[in-house]
Length: 194
Image (cartoon, rainbow, N blue to C red; front, side):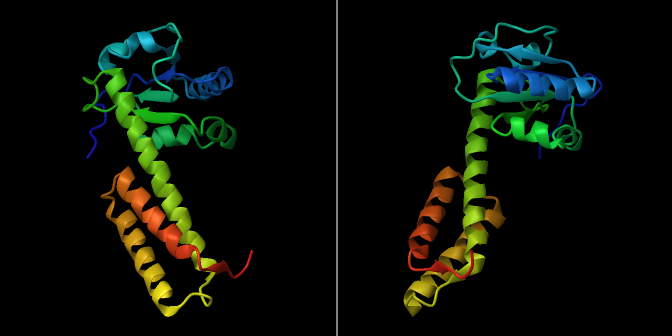
């Protein structure tokens, strides 16, 4: 369970590594909600998140140490933050930006540690989405060209993949393995419709 920050009165958004266009979109989104948004860079990566949240102006935007782009939101409930992203243009423009909501747990982490953990989770989320897409694509398959053993293997791998996602107990390696096995089993099938 994630404990969100108790003091939700002072909302703030910090931006790391965003392109000029993404920065503009994120600032517009924040401004529409009356929330300040500031750019941060590599100089704060080894500082505690709680200390960095005290900034009141843009910092040096140089971001060479971490490749990913991050939007760090403080003082938000998850539902409120997701509400900011409902605008289709905003959601599309920021789709590759990793979004992180500050919690009581990660206030004492360094910004680098928080970004590292969020980046790892983003990879897992993308892999889970790919596996989910593979499972959904199986709904329109013609397996009549596969022998009985291959059909049974496909069904078993589909079942294992579904159970893995439902369990929520997975990492990148487990997702990769499930996707690889399912992909191998799908080779003898074809789409019923396009």
